[in-house]
Length: 233
Image (tube, helix red, strand yellow):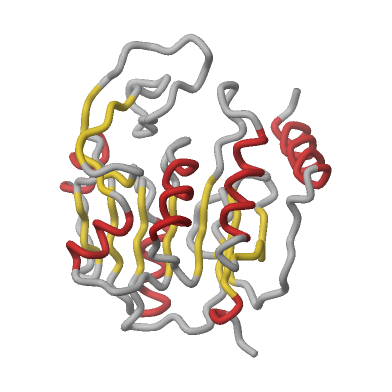
């Protein structure tokens, strides 16, 4: 099956579950990643609090946000591949890297290795039913803990690509906050071990916190959520 057909079937399954765009917003494509991160520029500026979690070796979105809004961006990734790669880059001072992961706990979390040794896509959940042995243990924090440790009483924009860990993070964030005005999430219902029902539940939890879907990527994996007060009237 071709990638294009995979994507079309995934979008069809989303529509069947009622996971479609719910609110109109003026959108801009953010960065050069074909994953198609998209956001609304309204209300974002140099003083915005921006978190980008699970950066790996792909920081096109992050650098775009810094150029576009002049904001300081806090980037997070606990995996050695990402830490080593980030350490070799020449980055603007607004790019603040933290060797931490995002999770529903404060402490250490087990991660499984990616299929390719050169990949940075470590995951806290097995991709398939037959789990490989854990590859490493790395420090993680809850979103509320990160905000407190960094001295932030709110988060304006959170971008999260954490290879299946987003489901527990969303549940914790929904219960305990903070609730970013704009939320970009790559869901991982493309993993054999992750049923689409997990994404349905996560969206329900976000809707209960006044989030609405403003964009879904052509791949049917990257979602953009916004709270009504973050949109122009």
